[in-house]
Length: 317
Ligand code: SER
Image 1 (cartoon, rainbow, N blue to C red):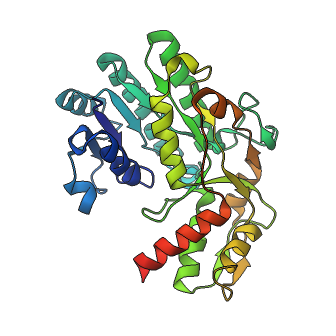
Image 2: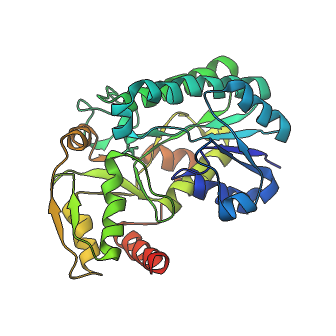
């Protein structure tokens, strides 16, 4: 039986991943790791163990790992791209110093580690369409720099010490449970909230700017499936391109308008977000993930839109 620690369990991915893992491996086998100020609440708190687990404090993480006999760590602690650009030192401290702590704890306690990479690990010199698995990675953001470093350091720990590190390059993640905080792709979440609240949406990304996006259920499935994959099949480790849909603002707007004909959107381009978005690929080639661990997403823009609107309508009334 696996004993899993989710670090960042109250964040956008962690809040849903923790519950999914508890459903698969048993509530008592999945520890929700959080930091002060981001305490778990409700079902997340009540359904299983929770511990303070700050990646910047390696000794404290090691104590949690030992206490619960942890063998798998999902390291989801990170600042997203826009916030990181404004707090670069903190982004490094969490993303790189924190990762070092996690990998050391994993080496000493024989844990597998999943630390997400991102479409943000690519830059303007990367082929933008059908971005290959192995290609140029010269990001222009501190977020991207930390993600490339994450991939390289995780691969190095695997080759050097045999630590079972695996990861994916997440696209923009769209979910209806916990909002993202300060990413370039957040507009694709915010637009649904505006539609359900009957508000006009002010889009910070210019028309025609394509980025890969993914609905959270597929992203969670990727985490579980990759960590369960037969290691003998893995040619790559950190991190796999995964993709399920690519769109630009007018396409998500049109998809929502099919359900909410009165919904309005205007553009007010945010210079920082736009410069980041323009430096990222339009659409990734995920054939290695499909071949090496059977990645096969289920949601496209239309099925995601129907589900998002239904769930948010129920929740927001
Ligand atoms: N969603 C992230 C961001 O926009 C990209 O991985 O920062």
